[in-house]
Amino acid sequence: MKKSIITLGLVFLCIVSPALLTDTAQGEQQDAIDSFRVFPVGKVKKASGNTTIEIYDKYADALSGLNRFSHVVVLYWFDKNDTPERRRTSRVHPRRNPSNPLTGVFATRSPRRPNLIGLSVCKILSVEKNIVRIDSIDAFHDTPVLDLKPYLPRMDTVQGSFGPQWAE
Image (cartoon, rainbow, N blue to C red):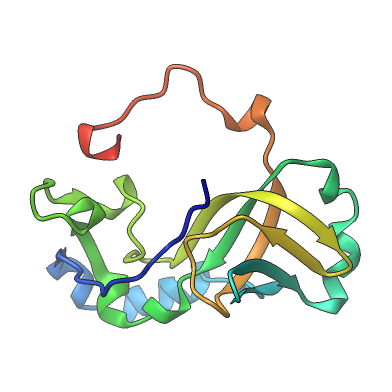
């Protein structure tokens, strides 16, 4: 069965923490000290029913050996979500469902968060040159890719894990 991701329009139900709305000079200075830069290594590409991760040429050699894995962990940047208000969101209704309780963003997969890092585990269909063909990803066309890591069942599968009912 082929899976498709269809975007129907997004409504974000959330609470912005008042404490996060005001920055003091000292807070801004601390943010500058604690911040760092991350550079994309490629982009998500979606066209004609195909989903790929196009790695920039200078990083293509880093794909060596990835074809020996069935799945890849993709870290990406929610660039189309990058506004000061969205970065200050502290709680949301998970899965954009107002029936779900307001929950802290660190306890959800919401794209509204202080650092707009997304994560998806994707099935690898092929790896050729600088292109990783995958089955699907919860990201838009041209989303910046920050890193790829092989999915390792022994390390990435957690036995006995659990979560709230809305996460099932």
